[in-house]
Length: 219
Ligand code: GS8
Image 1 (tube, rainbow, N blue to C red):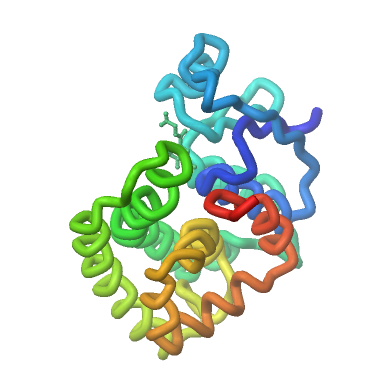
Image 2: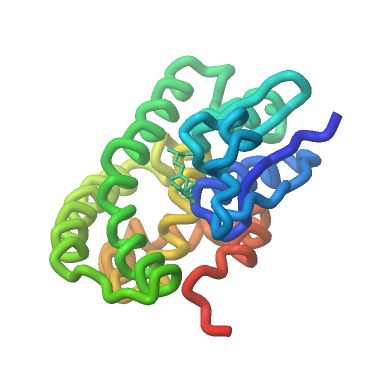
């Protein structure tokens, strides 16, 4: 039975899961959810995610929500000798992958999220003006997080070690959008972070996903 992913290609959280599915060459069906009409707050979708947010995934009788939990499930289900984004065969590497996945979720995302929301969502979806105070505070926070990354990337090629993992993958969609804003300089002015970004964003699996990350593009 084909996996069904409920979401939209331009959403950062949906893109995390799609990137992971493409890394494994997994078959899936992307089922669009219309956020404009509030489909995600209707009973049919709330039955898949009671918090009314995309993405959600169905695999047979299993229903999941929370993008990082979904991508972890996908990486576990489809892991193979040529692709193990969780490093599950090596407990030490697996622990480092989990650590840096937590860093992405607890440090990176809370800092980058408001910059993305103010610079892209507010003008594009609501026709409003970005709140510069929020952007400045979040940029300072993100700069400090990326300083830690810069140091970390001086001792390993990727965040969890010298191997690409789910921890790196989870950063892709937010950084992709950040690079469309003036705050992409936070990446560009840190040489190791910049090189890491150029490396992870050039993976074929992500290139397919990037084509769908069209928020903020001029028509
Ligand atoms: C966040 C989901 C989320 O914010 C996850 O899956 O990682 N922690 C969750 N989804 C957004 C779209 S983000 O691309 C969403 O559904 N927004 C609409 C809403 O909140 O009403």
